[in-house]
Image (tube, rainbow, N blue to C red; front, side):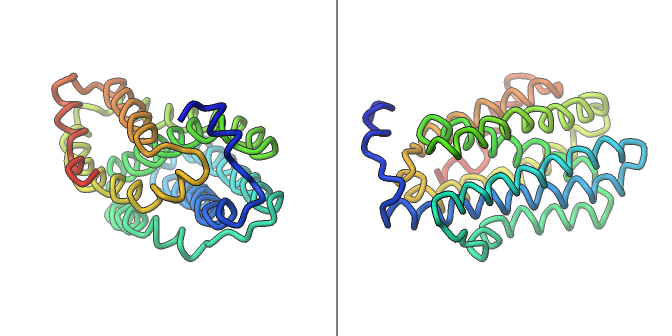
Amino acid sequence: MPQLEMMSALDYQSDVYKDAYSRINAIVIEGEEEAYCNYNQLAGLMPTDAEELQKLAKMEFKHKKGFEACGRNLGVTPDIAFAKDFFSSLHGNFQAAAATGNIVTCLLIQSLIIECFAIAAYNIYIPVADDFARKITEGVVKDEYLHLNYGEEWLKANFATAREELETANKQNLPLVWTMLNQVAKDAIELGMEREALIEDFMIAYGEALANIGFATRDIMRMSAYGLAAV
């Protein structure tokens, strides 16, 4: 459905829209909360980068407040319990990696997978968002590129020693993204966001990140294929 036709078909005050929004809004709120906590944890694991990581964490907390305001603007109560379950697998894997000091895995989960997931979702959502949410989301997505860039630059500088762990972490965590996308596909459609577009935008952002770090095209194709059978 063309974008203008999709927008004209959306009723931001309908029960169907608000029901779907209660879960999508909760996901972005919880996603920003996860990012806030993850960057603060990384600051403890990476003392030389602690100041920069704490700045990133503060930005994520600000994003969370912005998305909470989006929900209030539509009179929607976010389903945080749903969102916590939605992120539980990635959350668990990040915590396990942090507990053993596996910084590379932590960065792949937060600075690559979660940031690319957020960038794809926000870019697809902006054209079909209500006016209030659009302004908030446009500001947030600019910041997310900075967060993605931090992870890319650190992993690029440490690529020789990080490569093996990156490939292992990718194999463990990328399939979770496809499961997550499938969980919210119906709700995303109610908000005017096409599942195929979300997948495509994520794949592009994630592939570009892997290329910037130092992976060759053949490696990126192989790494990006994990879990796609579930899509």
